[in-house]
Image 1 (cartoon, protein in one colour):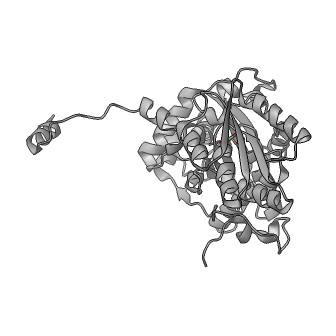
Image 2 (image 1 turned 30 degrees about the vertical axis):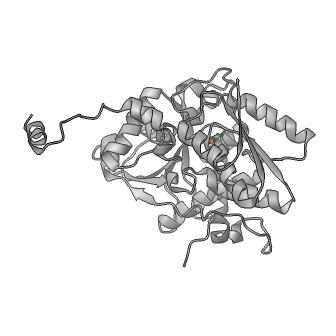
Image 3 (image 1 turned 135 degrees about the horizontal axis):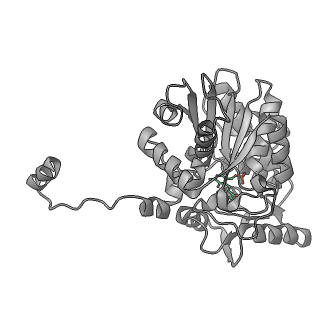
Length: 350
Ligand code: AN7
């Protein structure tokens, strides 16, 4: 059967009526990829069954499309003409794309200079009005929360409950892809904490078992780990450069109820996992997306997670092409050779 997006696939589990017209880009149905080489690197000889949920293969290159199909569908159903969000980049690109498809005006507020190039390029291409603010994501979120009190504009950040409804379909897919059961561990990056909240909702609703949740935050932006708002969050993983997550309380509930954990990983840890994903498994993600893998490796190394015979799923939230700047700055310079085969053979003999 042709895949027609997450709402059509899981309509029985979502609060849309049968008549609601769906705004979709056929998002979801992303691969769950077994990663034996990476498993061996982070948990040698443990028989860890490690899977990677490659959310970068969604239509705009991140997991945000799952929630955005639901939020924009509902905004249209309610008669909205304009939508707005604050964003570290991926929500902006997704909101812009689904708004274009629905014929809505779309405004996105992004922290100036702290949004990866691919996200900016896409948001502009989809025709969103991109507004750079001289503040953080958190400042932008305060602004959009306020403006929707004053103006008839729909807010499509993950404080919008429809976003979570769409994003919870990721849990359903994982259970389906694991032949009807949840993994032992579910590992993911945590920024504004919408995704961790949505995944936990999804596992609870689907009734195929419950994983323990492992959240990873970047050490320079780890408010949930430290229990304190971070006024000036910093990390190379700009997607999760967030100091005051909107879904903080729900994240704590998900961690508590799942007997889970949340941990901070350094930018070096994030980049090391980012390299491993690319070099051991051929999977190119944006840096934030490697945070779940980094958290899992850290907790296994510390002895807090016993990997023996366990099944773990890491959510790879965004595609590597989102952030070409970081990728190039981390890479070796390409080799330059004259355009002749002898030079190539000389190079091979080195
Ligand atoms: C690649 O786009 O907040 O904990 O404004 O882009 O649900 O916030 C992005 C978040 C992880 C964290 N990985 O998810 C935004 C935004 C990637 C992301 C997260 C984001 P949440």
